[in-house]
Length: 355
Image (cartoon, rainbow, N blue to C red; front, side, top):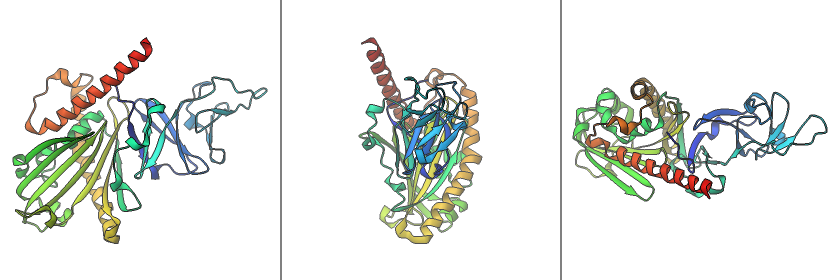
């Protein structure tokens, strides 16, 4: 299975990368080490010294120099991957003494990494997650590392018909199966829209979202996808028959960002966002709800997806001839779009080699 390379992936929360420390992480099967220089600018390097191939993350961060020192023989590399010090012999730096540097942009509380052609890394193409801009929003943050392919994780968010069965006591009800669904494509975004009428939410969901118990509501769950695996879930509800402007309880803004670690493991970052205009209460809601979601996902979604991954094994998804249901429409479209993007990229690379 190939990855889409010329695109932006989440590499971590900006808050994960503390000044003075290195953060090592495998992304798209590649070892990466990230660090901040003296000006607090974040950098990402391939985590392997070209001398004896020791992980650079096993060395020392020389933050004042904006460099990483290999812990094995002391070669130093700056944020561009260039060797800037050879402590041996006459100190001459071998021409091949450099490591790959990946474009890394900090935006919307997120470290975005580009694993493809650095010349095509345009920060303007980072998807809009301004709902996580810490200047205007409280952002409750969480992270999981499921042992499942990232595309299975994307499917899970795009098709929320599963909440009736996987989350019957917290997020779903029998009304979910009767939802009106729509798939819509707007430019680079695919929307999976779900509208549930005349629903009584589980008591725990009412308490979680500030909805009176027993109140019949119309609920929407709208998911936006952008390549390769960045999703935004917008949810809320109104008393049955009322327009959205009369929402009751909590309307939530819930990003889900997946980055493949390997073919069978994923990084999963998600958040709950509340406008700062809501004051201290909005901050408390963002932190409390994301903590509850993290517990629910880890207890209910993750085990199912991991068993699903074990069942699929190394088989190619479409080769298994999956039975398709109405809720799969968005997931199928997204899989086809991503397949086409990856194939187009592969064809382009092959043409470059040929020429």
